[in-house]
Image (tube, rainbow, N blue to C red; front, top):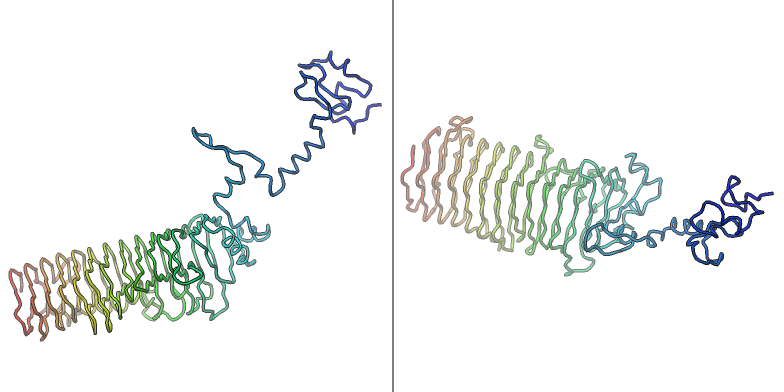
Amino acid sequence: MTNDSQNPLGKDSDVSSKGSIESRASDAEPFPSTYDLEGNRLINSGEAIDPTDVPNFVQVQGLIQDLSENTGASQIGYRQARTGAATRTVQDKLDDIVSVFDFMTLAQVADVRAGSLSLDVTTPIQAALDACANKTIYFPSGAYLLNGGLHVRVSTRLVGAGPKETFLYFALTSGSSANLISINASSGGVIWYGGGINEMSFVDLTASSNTTGIYVENVVDGVYQNVSLTGMHVGWSFSNGLNRIWNTQISTLGGVASTAIGVLADGISCGVSIFDSLIQSSTTPANQIGVGYLFRNGASPTMRAANTYGCSKGCQLTAVGTTMYWAELVDCQFDTASDTGLLINTGAGGAIFGMSIVNLWCGTFAGYGVHITQGVGTINGLNFVGGRIFSNTHAGFFIESGSNISISNMMISGNGNSSNPGIAVLGPVSGLVITGNRIGSAAQFSATQNYGIQLGVFAISNCVIVGNNLTGNIGAGLINGSTSPVTISGNAGG
């Protein structure tokens, strides 16, 4: 009788327990001695083989088991199918990018994928961050519930499937003071290089007045791209270092609206570049973000198409006790809110030097379009070129103090609400140049400005007003109350 359990070839095989090696040699096999006495098929059977050296069924099962273990990928080779590629293991290849799913239970993964927000995944995500410093950590599409903040380690890069695909929802205890994401050195003075966050959305479910969305300290060359922030009191906070934000959106910050900040940069060694980003708030004054972009205490920005809508102040640059050098704003739009589009000011011991503002848009503010005041400090070298300041309730430009301020080739119209000018200089200013501007009624805006330019009764020295079109204002195109000589020439309607 044939013992099928001992014959892996099965009962239909042409090999029986009564057969012999010699009888099998006549079968239609490429080589003699194809099977051993136990019915195991031999390999390399053209040569004399010791049957004990041939892998049997049990051994193959063991190999399969080994490969299925968590170390199995380290036993499989891989080589990129391109000239010059080197061989590595599959494990090494997979380690190029780490998924947070690698650290979660199956139930947690299912919850994230379903978007149920019923299982807290703070612990496994923090474990991934701790174990994988200097790597790219991937957050697959889904909704992640976190009951605590996260600390990102050295030069780590977080990447999601897109800001409309990967959502991190933070449900901290109401009233907690915390950073939802902290990216900083563990001890003072340490600088980290690289890393960043890409293609993700962060939501603060508690809308606390004490939370900061993403806090970045002592990081150089950090890149944050395609990120959305909602609900936290301060969206981004930067301290020391040099970082870049691309295509970021911040909306509806939580807590007390008047003190909320979209992007905060603080410190003399802090530089932030912001490109193609939007901070959007409520148009109801009581619910507006206090300041869209706030740079203070020496922090200096480079901004390209960094816009706000509905923030009480669009952008504020403040130096107190420190110096801010060479800030640059290009193609920025600050629109529709209760206070001021762009505020530039200093406090005791503070100074702002060499600022370039190109193609600025400040419109529909209940206060000023641009407000410049140096207080007890120094503002020297502001250059405004091109752009539009329009439909602000008070003056388009309100200049209280400063030196070497230039305004050229701008459209300044529809401001003042019948009682304020397009440009008001109501403080001591030295080296003021206003040239080549259209300051008066314009397309979509009738004569609403009381004056085109108003110079108050102050020492406004080295002032040049040349080649402006000042037609279309309710009162005069220019009113000059300066106690110092002013050069006025070639102005239409002046």
